[in-house]
Length: 495
Image (cartoon, rainbow, N blue to C red; front, side):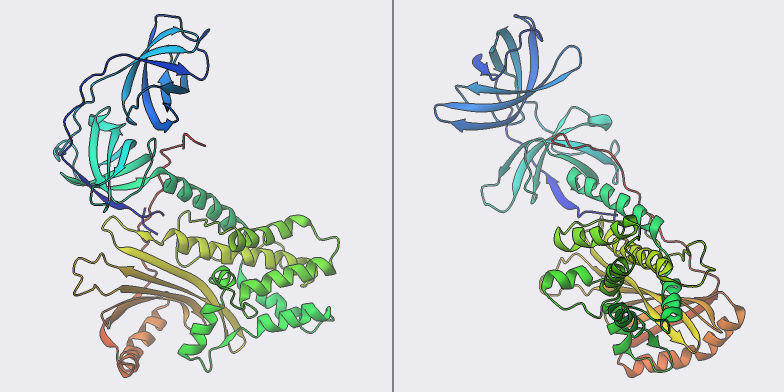
């Protein structure tokens, strides 16, 4: 989930070539007249965005700013090439004719002053030039610094990122000659994810309320297809009297967190909770022709967007466990209208889990790849129905030794509320076969019970060839995790 978002790429600051000498004036022909905008004889400063050969000439894309502050993007034909990022002085001659003179390129910075820009400082950069290295192993680029004490100066960089002139980026200082880059398009995706997560979090409702309502409807006369789907949903409940690792694993795999992945891979989803909920919504829509279309639009289009268009929304403040949210006016007897509302809210809750996991899947500033999976499974403990929330995080550390690959660090969170224990939260980590963790109980009597039985837990884990470290139990809830805020800095010029 880093920043809630995209991977960072390590980039080195390199020794630049010598500054270019100024060129003689070159006659350009613009694709549009500047009459009425600029008087003949006036001068403009323009930057070359792109330059490409075309027949006997070169086609340039220039960006300039008028005295009024208005920015213009101009297309021009030139008898000679100008590199992207060059600054030109344009002498307006009238109509579409201008004379261009290339200004000497300033020498890019070769090393950062860490007293001026300590590690962690963020700079906003704009790519001026970009070309492949001679060995074909990466790219060299020149970037214009747009904020901070170096604003207006240029950096010469070497990177594995393939970029184009005009790309906006956020750079985080790592050392005097190394920075990490995040292209602006990734930050815009993160902002879109934030919006999606907030939307679904506001619509989500308790899965427990839905399942209890389904149990209440099970004895009522229902359309045959709807009755079969409800029976299949209730059949997904895990009985805590005889749980097994395989049962829990299958329940999590069918929790809805992986439905789109299975659809894209052509795998069956008939036992997936989210797929069955969407089927229930469709069948309820048939049984209730007067059902508000708005309820359906909360669930079905989201499925199509995620499964078919592969839109990847990502999270607002991704918290675990996800707070319960019960819809209002649930004291009435369950009927098909109420069931429709509960099913749509349950689908939004599963979406919220998926988006939270997406937002926590990222490459952190140290180059470690973090992947997250999150969802919840139904548990039946005697007459008590509840849901256990699970989150798995794999942190693959950046490998610096090809002969000794780094082992992934796994973090496991489990949160549930079972009587007579009350709310329990387990947070464990597994690395290189070594497992340790902490349990939080909200009741003193539960803490005492856990401390008495924790040796039994350690024994069972050792029987599974797990090297068991320290486990302890505390009263209360786990401390809040650090929140990563999304910075809204750039708006794409192309957009």
